[in-house]
Image (cartoon, rainbow, N blue to C red; front, side, top):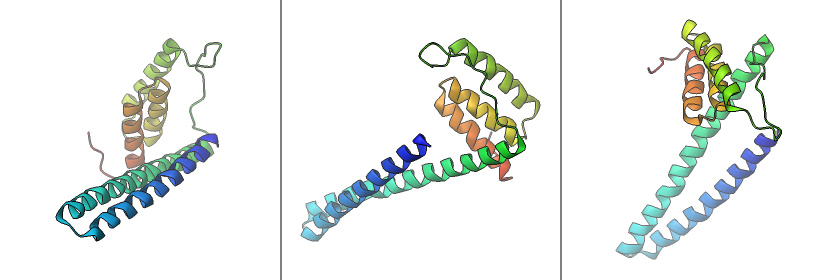
Length: 150
């Protein structure tokens, strides 16, 4: 729940920022000189890119949460079997061991979105965020029965 609250606060702050930057871009365009119009258009591009990025991330998180909810209803969420140090951080050897099992499961059933979801969690636990995101994207695509990029 804490992560959701943080995400929504960050998103709200970004939206306010996009509005402020967009208004400055429009003010520059309204000034009317070649230089200010050029800068105004350049400034307006930033909020457009930001809104697109925020939308894509929100869509990704929402779809991943839907998969987690479905997997939880099936009783298939991965069990937290990771060893932690005294500060609560995941021990690398433990994460590697669980990752190896999840990778083998995914290799055995490459068309199963559930195994890709669990692999994404294992990647995340091993602190490999880019691969975790790709694995989750693949799980989402398999769940939605969309073509999967190799």
